[in-house]
Image (cartoon, rainbow, N blue to C red; front, top):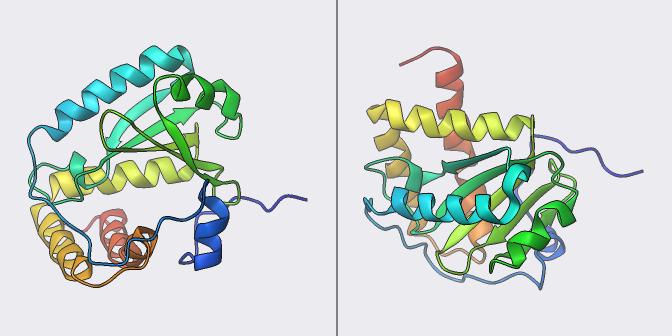
Length: 196
């Protein structure tokens, strides 16, 4: 019996990263580069959104700009994080094959975590996160993005924490991402509690 998907993902071990990264894990071995906010990031998102829509048509139930590059004024790794909702993210032929024909490459397959998939773009440095429609992680990602867009205090707090973490040496980028989970959860808890 397959493991059921779940929200709370423990920090990834090296074995986890190796298991879900197609073609093997790619080591980082250093600090993380954060770029100042770039006004071209939304334009890059729009170009990639059009490419995705052209490739998979109605299979793209929604395409959103997420992550730090989607928040004006926020420093970020200069990689456009995108969120694609499809009917069933485990049905890879319905979207992976046409996206691969447009230069995307499937890099991550996490069946045990909401059937999450990540594809990398070829023309723009993109992380395309794919989930099934209705997946709670989709709402969580959008709620966090919208909170940072609307709340300058949380945006500055999050950026300060990111800068502090980015200076450390990270074996894998996933380790850096996992290290941010606590501050993300803290901000979302304030948001859900109605605290401004």
